[in-house]
Picture 1 (cartoon, one colour):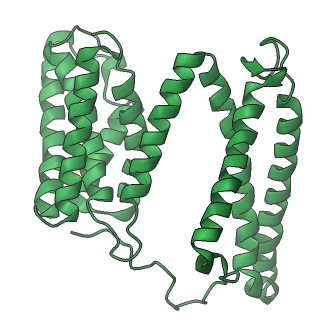
Picture 2 (tube, rainbow, N blue to C red; picture 1 turned 135 degrees about the horizontal axis):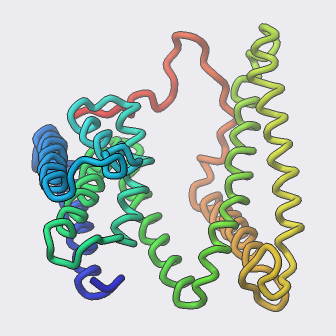
Length: 305
């Protein structure tokens, strides 16, 4: 099967449509979420047991084909998430399973040609993980904040457009895009450290432990990430024909710099637009931890049927 050929694209489209349809039906309560998640969970398990029976009957049991790979872990965790609804398991399935299975579907490594059973199993198993996570996370939407369905759909669509555009322009730009993520990591983690200190600012002087863990450590981490960000921006700005930090460049400016800093600029522009469109959100003051035993905002966003 040719990568992004007609068969591959049809399979991707079919999986996406099934996930979208079931998530919407569950969200609108037109089908019971409990029945769908249980069917997805047991379906993943049964499909996996059939596969390993088939594989071991043909290959035998060897150290190299034991089900101890990361993809096996995410598959079983996705099934467990459907059956138990344990919050930590669901989170692992969402971050690990969705990313891993999604990447596998986009770039399938098939052992045998389509439509052999191993090839069919590959898409059923990985598509089942995406389906399970979609139903669990997107099938239930918070009634007030309407999260996380549309945010995820929009982000996924933009990611696909970005991937196709970079591949069409220069496949080496994908490497620069991965490197540019480091800038986003610095902002995300550094901002989180600073936010931690601000959020717990009223607790800092209550004990030495609070002062260090809620104040000193997060702030030092934020400063370190800020320093790393400045260093990365400085090093990634010049483009020297692919021998430096960037594989691509435009007018002497490195692709990593263009994508990283360009994303920040776009983010600032979008924030200004939202500031004008939704000024009430930006009028809120810095929040603080409500205290032990007090209700935490958004605590009602827990997973259930």
